[in-house]
Length: 270
Picture 1 (cartoon, helix red, strand yellow):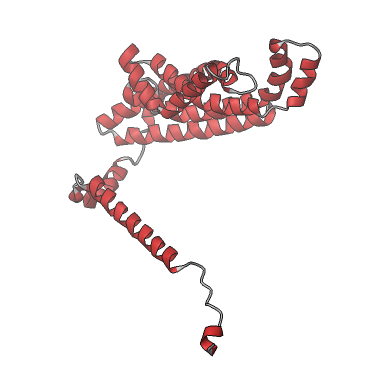
Picture 2 (tube, rainbow, N blue to C red):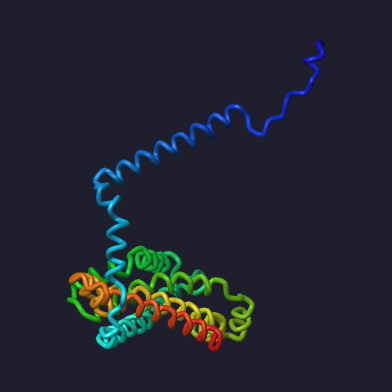
């Protein structure tokens, strides 16, 4: 046996086959990216893209200074927006609670029929954006605040229902078993064994969703569902950029205030 044959083989982190496979994978990923980029940009007018910085600077110059005299006209639409978010959240909570009880494994009356139906409702609600809900509802029941409230409620069912049914499934089973040992029925077990454990979670989820709905309700007016979005759409339509600035600043202030209110509620009530 020669000296070279007695030497141990050189260790490698990856074999040659694995390295070639990785290079082929990266090459395929780059090719896929280039192909997708070509599809997405085949109708792009690059002259407009190159001109975009100048257009943005022009619009920015027109937005300053803000037209503060327009602010009083925004108070009623802002109030409508807050009502859309609040009433929509309340409706979402009312509808989501029974859906969550049907979706949770430890509270559903039927794991084979009602639970799949409840899970489908949750997924369907979460899959459709509130703006799309509002667009559909404006077509069905006409423009106005009602369409916005229902759109927010339908969107909230999935968010609240999913988090709430997961909280129900995570309840302490020993407390429930202790109540069942007293001979309590399903309603009593739910009332005294499950509800006290999940109520703080429900409050937290509801406040969190209300905070999100404040943001979402500000744009529902773009499709005719009422609120401050109507004013934003009207101002943009007539190129009144100084009014747009006031609306955007008002929306920003409202969102900051809702963040503070939500944090305060979580600290004091939950």
